Image (tube, rainbow over all chains, first blue to last red; front, side, top):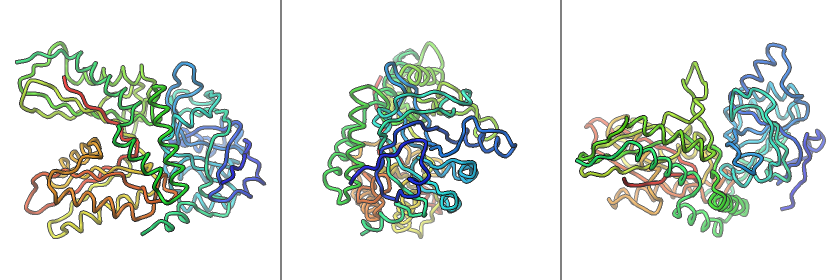
Length: 183
Length: 281
């Protein structure tokens, strides 16, 4: 299967053209966020405050990296399970977030918001954390350092491998593939 | 009475946590490599090759296999002829956890309070300690590092005697099916049957740390382990949940006597990165 090169921040037209099952290589800046950061981001939006970064067309990676050992930009940094961010994701898409990356199923509300706002959900392989971290060239904390691993980081990634799990039409790899191998 | 200094327990726990974090067991490693050749799904084979490569990087570079280096669960089988000196046992465990997570560049993933004050303790303490008193003058230490992607998918159910074998099978398969891609399949299921509410859960946890090439010594339960595993692999979930026949590497069952009215069943889900290590002091 041919890999599709995807530059970050995302190009809305390219996002609309991506299809569930596409293998992609991501290059550019992205932002990290998981449970605690999502709670704070949505609290900020609901109170009329700005997010710590401009969300327009950005990709949020659901990850809490391990500390970097000497000589590395970041420690192991594989995806965390996405459904815990489902309660917050539609509000962030409304604010401009164009893509999410994690692992695992999403709620109907999240998929509906993805279709409405033209967004994509990428999957990275859970548990391939050391491998993934080799494609992260730089990491800096942009907000809430008190959250430790859960702080919002900006990662600069190069050719980070991922797959389109759910596309902007709502096609879902978790629904289409397992039935093919069911006995 | 044999005296063992508390600091020896600290050192051993630190050593075992680092070993478990960086080095996948040969049982899981070879199962993943074998499935990477045989799974009928090309996507599954590609995912499994990534997992094998990731284990290799973690081992050779001494970095964590997964960023979720978990809560540290410590099983201490303490000989009844052992006297621990020079400090408290729980402090010795926590110091082992603290130093391993600090010096080993492992993620600190523990919050102080579950509901109202989710402040990170910054050193991954406290460890979760389970003590058994056993015959002898040694201390057996088993460390297992449990990430919560899979822990969150675990379930317990108070079945009744009339539910029988099919009740156990259906419940365990349903746990895996509901979990789907979330717990990082291929998974390992630790299953505890019998006892009480809490002993079933504890047996299930112990079973996630049993090597996957070991089977229950009772042939009836060994057959049940295989039956549940085969049913889960027939679901088609596959590695990473994107389709395939490699969904469950092993089901490991432990049992114990229970009440005339009951049949508790706990299913503890563990990801493919089943990180555990064992030592004896």
